[in-house]
Image (tube, rainbow, N blue to C red; front, side, top):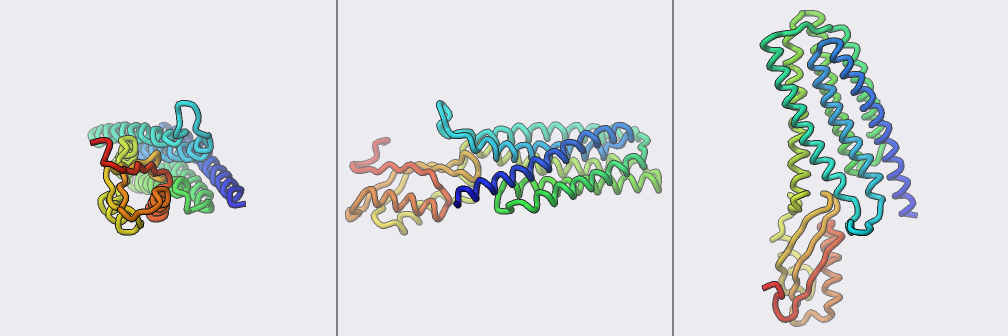
Length: 294
C-alpha cells in the first residue's frame, strides 16, 4: 500500500508540474510578443525569467518521468543524472540570457526608446495572473518533494518579474519616464543571474562528484567508529551523489579485535549511514591484513 501511495503521489505531482509548465510556457510566448509590440525590455526580461521557470518545470516533469526508468545495459545507475546534466545546460543558457539583457539595457540607457505603456501593462497583469495560478497549483502538491518545492520557488520568483513590469508600465503611462523600463529589466536580470549561478554551481558540484556541502566526512568517520560496535577504523571514504538527494558512498573498514560477525558490523554501518545521513547506497570493503590499495 505504501508503494501504491508513493506512485499516486508522484503522479499527482507530475500532473501539477505539467499544468504549471503549460501555463508558464504558453504565456512566455505571449510575453515575448507583447514585449516586441510594446518595445518593453522589462517584458522581454520577464519573458527570459519565465523561460527559466519553463525550463525548471520541464526538468521537474522529466525528473518524475525519467527516474521511473530502470537501470539497464551500460547505464547501471539508471537515468538519475539526466536531470543534473539538463540543469547544468539550463544554467549556462540563463547566463547568456542575462548577458543579452545587460547589453540591451545599456544600449537603452544611451539611446532611450519609446515604450507603449498600456500594452505593456495589460501583458504584465496577465502574466501576474498566470503566475499566481501556477503557484497555487504547485503549492497544493507534496511540499516534502524537492522537485515540487523547487518548481514552486521558481514560479514565486517570477511573480517579482511581473510586478516589476507592472510598476514600469504604470510609471511610463503616468510620467513618460522611459528609463524605468531598462532599469527594472536589470533588476529582473539580477534575479535570473542569482538563480542561474546557483544552478550552475550546484549542478557542476554534483557532476564533479563532490561530497554534499552539508557533510563533514571526518566527523562522519569519527561518529561511525564511536557509534557502531566492532568498527576499529575507517579510511578511503568517498561520498558523492547521482543527484543531491540520491547519495552514494564507498569506504574501507577495519574491524576491532572483538568485532564478532563481519557481516553484522557491515550491516550496522550501512544502517547507521542510512539513518543518520540518508545514504542508501554504500559499498564497504572490510580489511583483514591491511589495506590492499597501499
